[in-house]
Image (spheres, rainbow, N blue to C red):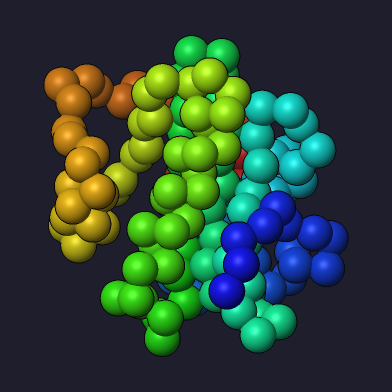
Length: 147
C-alpha cells in the first residue's frame, strides 16, 4: 500500500469511495471539492492505493495558521487495519512540512464511532461553536439547489 497525491485518473474512484463511506451530500458536489483542492500550494488530496485500487483518502489543507482535514475515507473492507491512522499520519506530515502546528477537523455530532477514532489518535474536542453561512444561497437538505 502506498499513499500519494491524487491523479486525474483517480477522481471517479475517489468519488465512489466517498459515496460508499457516506461522506457526500447533495449540496456539496465531491468532484468540485477535489478540483478546488488540487493544484494549489495550500491543499492536497492524498489517496491510499493497494494493488492498483484506491482504498482510502484524506483531503488536507492549511490556511496559514491551522491545518484542516476532510474526507478521511477507508474502504469498509479495509477498516481496522491501520489505514485510517496511516492516512492521518500522512496528512499531519504534509502539514508539519509546511510549518503548521495545529490540525483541526469537523466531525458530525451524530458520528460517535468516528469521534472515537480521532480521540484514539489524540484529538480532543475544543470549546468552540461552528457557525456557517452559505454564500451561494444553498440551503442544505432542501432540493432544487441554491436560492
